[in-house]
Length: 231
Image 1 (tube, rainbow, N blue to C red):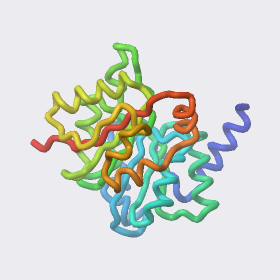
Image 2: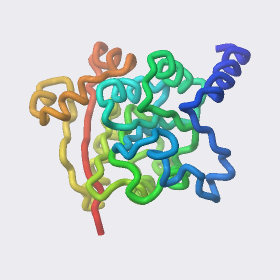
Image 3: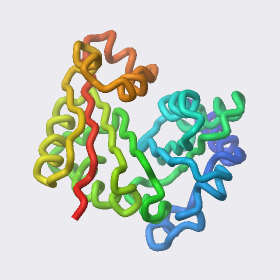
């Protein structure tokens, strides 16, 4: 992608009414004005809020928003030129229950208030396989502690990945942290998907372009659903 094209996407992304781009240095140290008020100020309602962390082009967030108009969805990523695609699609289709937040996930608790979020989706994140980058994994205990600050007590966390190491690492984190494992499979689109509950099966029917390619190439897609331990 040329620098000019990339900049054009950044500019267009910033112009949409369904996008939020806080200054990194501000949310590193301060709470954002929308914290605790996403429902009323962004969506104009009090419906459940669902986050997709590391949403990339926003395909999954848009797919969820289409399927579940009774919920609000927020795709979160740092790369605005990628999220541009999802924001553009949502605007073109008039999907009003979705927004896109451009920020670093490390600072996300500066943007959401206590009990503000009902679900978190983590879809095909960078598995950060090098040992020295373990703390960058989005299911590392430090991140889970961050999520606990704004996730409802009965809130759900979903992880879909083609990385077996990340899948099994997260299983260990769940076990060691005393979290509540609800679903686990190391081959989602094999027989396992038929063994999930109907609601989960319907949600998992949404696939991104790259997820479909991974499956077609024979890569096993893994899935975890869990709730955080409540002290």
